[in-house]
Image 1 (cartoon, each protein chain N blue to C red):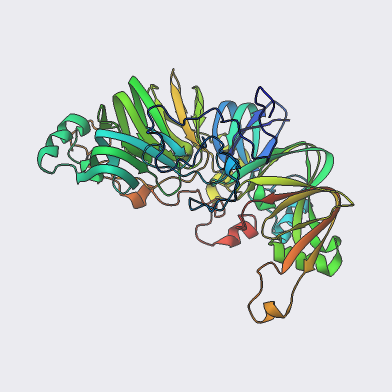
Image 2 (cartoon, each protein chain N blue to C red; image 1 turned 180 degrees about the horizontal axis):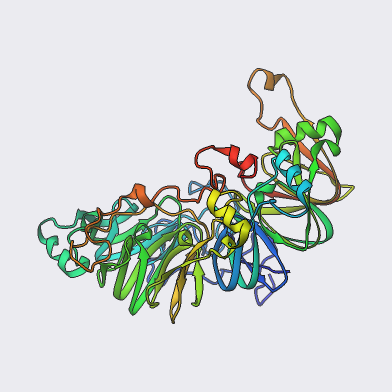
Length: 216
Length: 330
């Protein structure tokens, strides 16, 4: 539904009665109409166990529930915003990057090791995702923050995509990812190219890449 | 080449002289080189691989206007317009007022003086109306083109026609002497009155909204024509048993959005798309008299408002336990 991009750093959400929007706390810039902002102790959806899971996984970005009727503008920290529409597929994104998302989406926490075992965990460390990441699935929109503009690169089975782990923002779809290393003796003596680790994504889907190597 | 001239296929260096040539009216027939749009009409055997000594990597010539770096000189710099989102070029002929330290480059013959020196003393009365904050301003005098910028923030110019606009003091960069600058009743804001142009910075592009609207205090850049904003507090979730516990203990955190500025009436509200404020400049004391808001209070210093004002959402109720509070969901 409801995110309209106003400019590169701001989105507007249409909030309707009975429909929730979750957003990062403190990310509201302005609103008109009757809208309330309630801190969400659970940090998202699901019951108590999901909440505990998120806290253990450190994927518990402070969220607030936005309800009511009106239009709300979101933006945070001067970061660029990218709106991703999900139509039944799954988005994997770090919780810190979530600016706002539809209440209709299912939010859950994923263990990085479940995608590629030990290498998945190493990958999480390198990309700064940690051991866990957040997944959102269902029908709805997500507004994701990035440092610098976001480009979407499609992933097809014929064409795997290599991404700098620091520039990685999110990915969606049926994607296998693995960390490919190009470590050589040059890296050992400190004369590497600085691109020793790359994230290789293959399968069906898309990866979102930011135009910067600065993490949020 | 077929006629009428088609836009050449991408990457093909065939020109019909593009529209946009000559670049500007009254432009002296190019001595030097306007590397911007408009190339000399093709001479025979073009393109020879020319060694290019002008700005930037040797992009094929036709694309310089599209992609590569644009090289400006004193004539091609825009007059009173943005060079890019972060730099503004003033076509100076006479005087212009700017905040200290916002000029990054200029062409021509321009002098910069602090206000209050010698003959500029009268300006305080004419344009600033208060001797107390005028020290933060500089008068640029002379002829030329002057480029303003401020830490890569987005700059915008605004035209006032017999209007008024109130803007956060740190965001105002420069203004035309035809405008007059006054302290707003609201501390930390300045009001511009009259007809003319001014330049203001914002963290992220500026978005205009019409009242009725409630605005995050940090996202507010300014407002035009509206009556003064008022505070709006949103404590409805503090009700009930859970809310009571939350209020007493701080457990559960705050949404960070309990307080907004509310605007009503006709006008425009200017928002920046980020909650990071720009450092505020001193707007000066107000007279210590009865009935004056902020009177007697020490004029607020930039530390009080400026710098990093992002509400620290990670530390809701428990003071300085750092990340612990968040970890345990407090």
